[in-house]
Image (tube, rainbow over all chains, first blue to last red; front, top):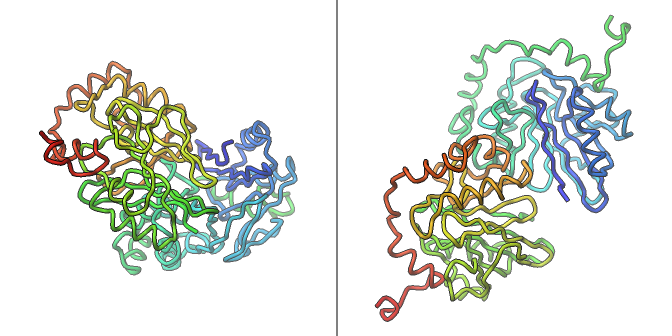
Length: 235
Length: 235
């Protein structure tokens, strides 16, 4: 049976991942998108999977998470970094912790820099790198407690210490690529390869990017696990 | 423990792969290069692996296989397609067959076109595609019973029918890339995406490539599992 699914949200180019423990058919869903909840529920149903965990790599600024709707539909638990400021999550994760589903487990690697509460998840030799390490790129560091020095330390210091063969699955790709490796990115990531910490900070500080189109909707909703804020919460 | 290794031969840009059954530490080595036998033996030794199988994706024209030397040093068995014309191999593989090592198995997918005896190996969701499907490219079809129509049928008909998430590990990459996916190649492989069988055949027939530098040494040696031909065999 297929034990790994990657599904793209075409509007935000967000990649969601479903990981399956084959013996129990228990599953984990990383970075669901609210507009794709029906698609994800259909996939879980078609493959007779029981969703155990809904994991976020961070509080996203470009799309609203499908966590709340998926939790309501499946009774899965939600988890996010303890540093993400998401009180509604079932569990608040810290560096080195393990999330289990059936006989499988994934470990939590804290990688602050894009946001303070960014984590990546390592399952077997597959790293789900969120918005920190992208394919031939990296996350921006100019909002949400972004810090280019921290991001450099997270990627160059922690992620690039993994074996070359480690597969890297980012939270986004904007040109149809699905996967890269630690080896490829250490060798050739244009933002990081051969760059000092200082040169990286300088590069990131000069990017001058527009704010994500959805940030004003996405951040408040994602701090509520994808639930719409009530009028009281907005005031 | 690490159960998957990818190692490059820098001269020929050949990628060898070691797959490990974690419970028994039995291993398989795909496409070894003769100049890298010491490196491979060191890796096996350092990780306390027992080499069970030495697999070839095809009779290579650009490098000499390390099969004979590895077999002598480890007592592993060798296997290659029944259509490859390699009498010395311990086992001659055909479409759909399974090769087991410990609790793991990989299946044989015949993909003629680059050579008549090309096979790929599928282990879990990882495809070892030999010289048939490369990252953003494909094998040439102008020698060794090459046939562009067959290669199109093998790639577009058989390999592209695998799930999008299937990881593709080729026998070569000339620019440092380690992996791609079936989804990426179906969408964007410049030789195949959106091309008819006729257009592909036309493209391949017009490539006009030089012969591989080592072909006159490599082919006779590889038909002998990497052993040097004796004077009698050469005459």
